[in-house]
Length: 263
Ligand code: KIV
Image (tube, rainbow, N blue to C red):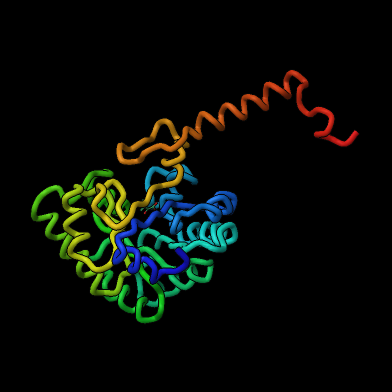
């Protein structure tokens, strides 16, 4: 996938969209050579890169720097940058300036969590030529309102609200919506009701595509593995083995050897 309009075409063609998070240039360079459709510079960087307990600590400066680094590593990929906590809830001008910084850093689009209070800004951005991805369900910036990282839209009324909000986001001009941690049946119902694609995470198979936090997919942290995040490797063990191998070689004078230094 080379551009944002292809999201809509993918849904129409029934071809699943693939997205992973990315935060820096070295990984972006690897991902640039894969078939993954889009990279999300998520505010999850606050947790997986910076070690905070939630995404509330992500700042505009953080996302801007991670977006620029990701763009330098992945010149050919569609990149979506997350609008950090409250960066789009102050003045209209302040929100627009925040978006401008992320787009200038190399994003092709921005992602905004929740619907209520955001549709006017989303319409303005879309009118100004900035593609916007919505995000509903277990929106991590609302962790305090939810009382933890908990599945959302489990009851009928909540599911109906989510559906109504998805339709509002579509009406406001979003080109796609992330659905995070909602029951599979709700994901399917929302996806069927929309013309734009839904990208699921922990929301079952009946959506238009999937997104995973790259660190979860790679198995970087043995202490954190949500049930929906399939591990495709155990990077924690592999990195640990590699570093132990290096330490052992240094301690036993096995490194460096001839050819690995200039006599
Ligand atoms: O910040 C992030 O990584 C996200 C994904 C989990 C969708 O928003």
